[in-house]
Length: 162
Image (cartoon, rainbow, N blue to C red; front, side):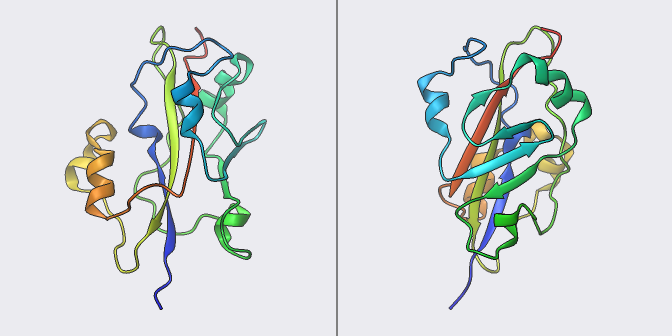
């Protein structure tokens, strides 16, 4: 019997440039409903386990100070590295801090966890490697037959000077 391996697609780089209508403390119903499955993203002073808007007082740290977050998946089997926040595998693209442009409103940063099929290690095309803006998430999902995400999480933030 083949064992499937979880694959975490950090899609923040793909969905950054969509303007979102939201107040500083209220998400739209669509944004609120995006998160499911028990994914948790942990920064030094911020533990994200549901869809939220990053508090203004933490936006500068998120954009300038903090490095890549720890990522946990409560649905992982006991003893799995992902349950303990120890992600293993090949890095397709390095983490880049959220840095939305000034006066551009809120931007979505999304994390999606897919179950990877055995024998189908994901990779990026030359075009995808050249620019995060050219990375077509839906084409990537289809190319590796990833299907629907096992878990999803997102946060919204804007430039810390706004």
